[in-house]
Amino acid sequence: MKKIPIVFAFDDNYALPAGVAISSLLESRDAHTFYDIFIFNSGLSDAAKAKIEALKNTYDGFALHWVHIPDDYFKDAPTGWSGIATYYRLIIQDFIPDYDKVIWSDVDVLFKRDMAEIYSTDIEDVYWSGIIAERSSAPKQIHEHFPENKNEYIYMPGFMLVNLRKMREDNMTAKFLQVLKDFGPRIKMYDLDVLNLGCDKIGAVPFEYCVLEGLYYDGKKSPEYKWLSLVYNDYELFSAVKKPSIIHYAGRVVKVWNRIFPDPQYVYFINKSGFGGEFLRRRLIRVFKGVLRPFVKVLLWFTYPRSLRKKIRTWIK
Image 1 (tube, rainbow, N blue to C red):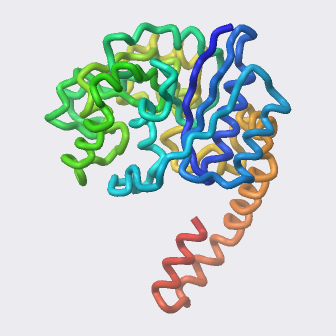
Image 2: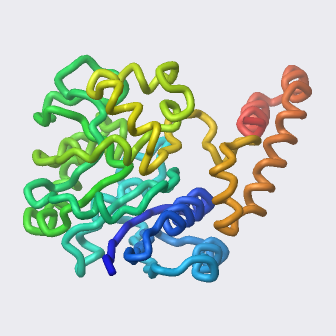
């Protein structure tokens, strides 16, 4: 049996999509694969943990490990729209000593196939392998460009093969922390910027392991096609769309698990994951807000003080 270590990181806000991601990972597992799942967190609720643990009642062929990350590890790092857990992929090498190579995955994904084949990829000469996004020397498309980045491409770390041995040997944790200190406010895409700036040896993972939902559903009409087509040809992109290994639900304003009518295949795994009740609660809230929104806009004209108007606008979104 092939044992494959895979790392996720999330807080309570992302427990539902994490349940979906792990459920889809396990359902797409081949009989010969065993997943050693590590969940990095800085304090998940007992309720969230219990739902993830309950997957053992539905699936087999895996083990769960809860890895607590101290709150102050990235206390000074910029976060903005992203939570602090996004940086946990920078320190995997410090918390999983028994493996020399692991898979990292974001949780806003659906796994469509077993990960044994991609895990067998040789990454001996690189720090990590990710998805090519755009050329670092070309005009900016969507990701931040830094003249200090001497790599040919900018790579997306939503799905990564990580060479923990090389990370440890070259003390990359210290280098990543130094990048955060040196670049400070210039960092806009958080872990992506740090990983691209800090590593001069990065490998490429086939695009099928990060098929963005815009391209998956809208094809050439999607905004992602404009910049992806500059580094991939149509055959590479749409072969991946036709048979994705992973669908990555990134790029749209409303996340798939917060939509009133999400993708049916995503809803299937919401129910399999045990988060069906949470999803229903979120759906009802969005419907309720949608009904109220026109009335609230009128009410805001008569609301005083302005600080209260701001709070109402934030809630109704």
